[in-house]
Amino acid sequence: MTDAAAPREDDELDDAIRGRLLADPALILHDRDLMRALVAAREAELGANVIDIRGRAMEALESRLDRLEAAHETVISAAYENQSGTQTIHRAIIALLEPVDFAGFLDMLNVEVAPILRVDTLRLVMETANVADPQPDPNGALQMMPAGTVAQLISAGRRAPRGADIILRKAASETLAIHGEPVASEALLPIDLGPNRHPALLLMGSAEPGRFTPAQGTDLLRFFGQVFRLVLLGWLRE
Image (cartoon, rainbow, N blue to C red; front, side, top):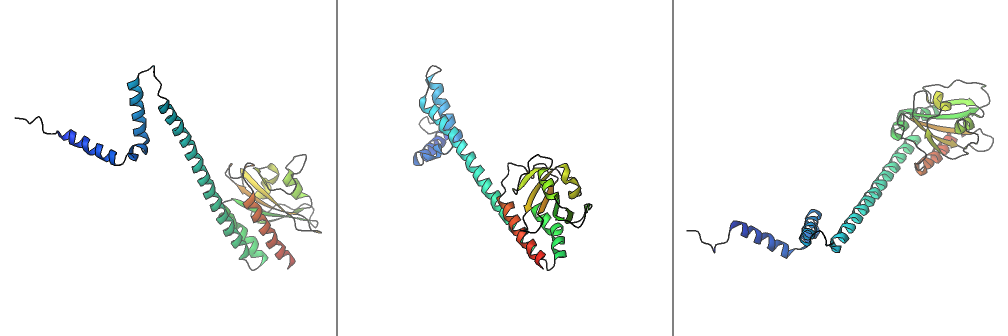
């Protein structure tokens, strides 16, 4: 004969859950799915003609929390990318300082610096008045070109040159021969070598269309260009 007064196994389980929730009610608050189910059950109990303002307020707060979390993740991601980019530039600068002669410096551009920067081509364009119409060397890091070439590469057919600003853009037809291989995007870092010297240009190319775009920041590339300029001036003085 079954004892009606004896507690059922389900009741014991319910009591255990009830006791845990009473001991720590925050368990419900920290579980979005559970809170959403409770609100839905409450609204269903009230009927279709009654609006639970508390439930609507909780939905609005939940939506705002989702936006805040997304913004937080974006900030964390940007900070990580910035830190990673800084470390990359530092490694590239250390590689620039290692060579013991100018030939080694030029070799280093393609052998180590370009892979560190994750670019497919890295060319140093320097102007000279001694050669009327030199041909680009597809495999050479140093490209000696006639006077006025740097301004032409920077303008890339535009009416007004962009000045000394770093340029991130889709690869232009004017630079393809200097890259020596197909690239989809490029970065141009003008280099001022001082008075009585022709300007120079550091040209980076990538097969990825989104590797260099005008919307990207240029602070790290500008810092790299400034260090590159000082290193290059040091070699030119020797």
